[in-house]
Amino acid sequence: MTIKVLIIDDDEALCTRLEAYFSMYSLTLLSAHCAAVGLTMLDTQKPNVLLLDVMMPDTDGFALCKQIRTTSNIPIIMLTARGELSDKVLGLELGADDYLAKPFEPRELVARIQVLMRRHSASPDTQQDLSFGELQILTASHQAKLNGQDIQLTGMEFKLLHLLATHPGEVFNRDQLLNELKGIDSDIYSRSIDILMSRLRQKLQDDPKHVKYIKTLRNVGYTFIAKPS
Image 1 (cartoon, rainbow, N blue to C red):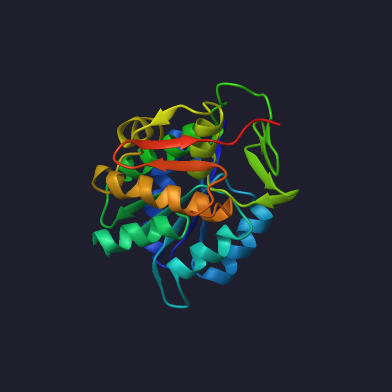
Image 2: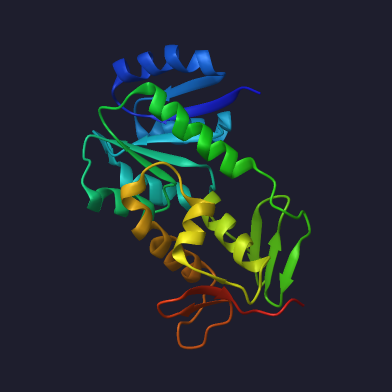
């Protein structure tokens, strides 16, 4: 199957190089050199993966990532010449699935895309839908609903929720969760679980003082406490 990759980046030379390289790996690259065109192509071309440059002349890539996350669960890899850890963490906090600093080797980018696609498209251990009162988890479509309203989850957020919900009462420490969710960029692993958990809890409207779904066991790990309905 050919995977469609949309890149929103004003570096036209980079886009041209990647297009030639991607063709060797059954990846079709669609290029947009400004945010407006990129958003249109995201809607009309239905790509499988989005590559998003942080520094563009007409917009901030972080803001664009946040905007896209309000309506789309597409896997997102941020691309930037700014390789500071704080930028990587910010990208994850805003909904990106991975973060790659420029300059990079095209083969590494391909590897990251392949990891994201496996993670995003892999069938969960069970195809059974799950229901926990107000929370419904639609396994086959990788969607979740709260009080009948769609929850906009990234691929990793859904996988984290599904993992916990299919093992209610079981305690997972960070190492176990990292083994399930990790990508390639190991220097952000330790923070990424906390970031993912925080984002997921916010989207589940899980009040820390009155936890309904995901409970933290201090110095131990996390457990899903809701009862199936």
